[in-house]
Length: 308
Image 1 (cartoon, one colour):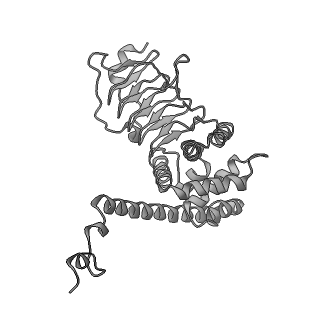
Image 2 (cartoon, rainbow, N blue to C red):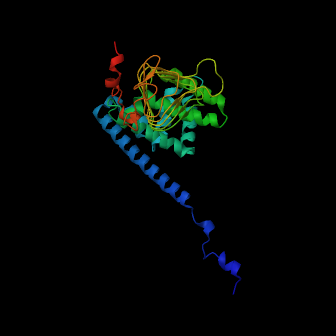
Image 3 (cartoon, rainbow, N blue to C red):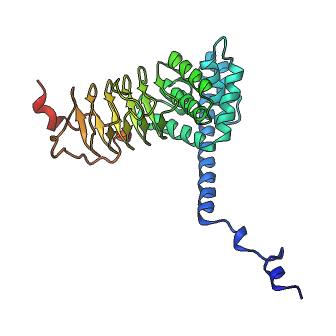
């Protein structure tokens, strides 16, 4: 009879070392669910593109080369971004390989892309389909290109990250520093003129409209840009400066200039921005995620006394 040690580690027996932990099992389930969601969304995008090609033959070649000829969302968006951002010195083939290698090497990037697509489709009433978002919404495209530049930045490939950042700014009029940290489920609505600084942080499920600046004060170094919590809504033309915190679920009204922290679920409006309900006891709205509801005007009844 073999020794007890051999019995314990024999091929027919199972040790705890070979059993996946609960966290590993959960990660596998999550990955499988994310793969299924991405595959389902890609099937829908191709169906939409096929329908559009039939309805508008003038776009058939464009839709085939950009969507229908590709086997995955990652390949399609890599091809599209490569063509959008290429120049005489940054060839589309080089950019395609760069985007595709980055997306396929990090599944979290693909998952963020799926969340961003859903954000645009659900929150923007002008967005008629997922395929139109992928093809034509420059806020969505700018965020995807930023995600690749951020990955390059974290890999210490800073010259290439900055070159890509420059092309995104030139082509889409959206300036997102590659060192900024941005979550998923992000909507840049209209997107023109959005500026997000180097040390800015943006949580998940945030909506930001055009001409928003998340900038520094012009005098500070180091960690000097705003931190935007999950579910926030930042109105058009808002300017948020300095290392200030916008709490989860907060709203910043259009055209506001914010230089101090905004509490969770509070609303800041005006120039300089003031908290609805007052500084001492600001009114807390009921919405957990204004970034999803896109409700820009619920504060008016309490703010109307200040309107001339």
